[in-house]
Length: 229
Image (cartoon, rainbow, N blue to C red; front, top):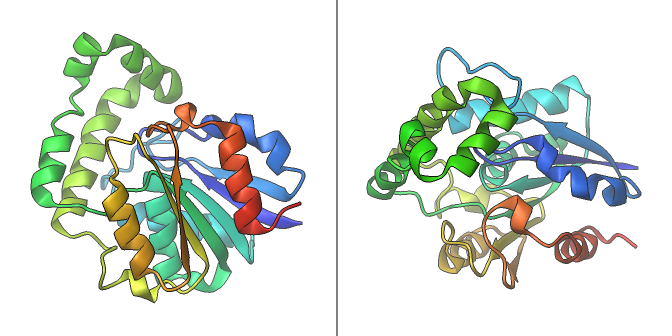
């Protein structure tokens, strides 16, 4: 059986993949990774960066001695997976990304990072604040500004762009929802055109959160991409 690594997005949790694990386990040995600062893991003293998360993916593959790994990454998880494939392709068979943002600019990152203010979220979106505390404990208030700093760093110096994506030679499928306000169809098409061995899928009536994705729709795309039957 092949190995499948499921990677959550920023402020997400590996528990979001529970609805998928039973069916996928018929085809794969399932692995999940909690990025540092998420769930029960500690926030790194040196802060969070996409480079750190890339190294965490690499370290997990080495620790578990995984070869020819298939990876599904949601949002930032997909970005980290592609960065890992760019720098350390030897253990990765193929990657599917969903809702991964490629068009990072400093101006836009600064604007979006201001939305990650814990007190504002507590006041304006208390249900989301409750979800964050359930997933990450009381440190969610420290996790938000750490993620905001990572976003600004990405805006200033994105490691994935049209000049670097061509270096990813493994099979990749870029996917985005047609109702995702965070990731445009245009930037997904741009990434798809820049990666030599890429496919593209636009999911109908689909928003950004993993919880909003219809499992049957995603299963069908996974089965098609990985040739499952």
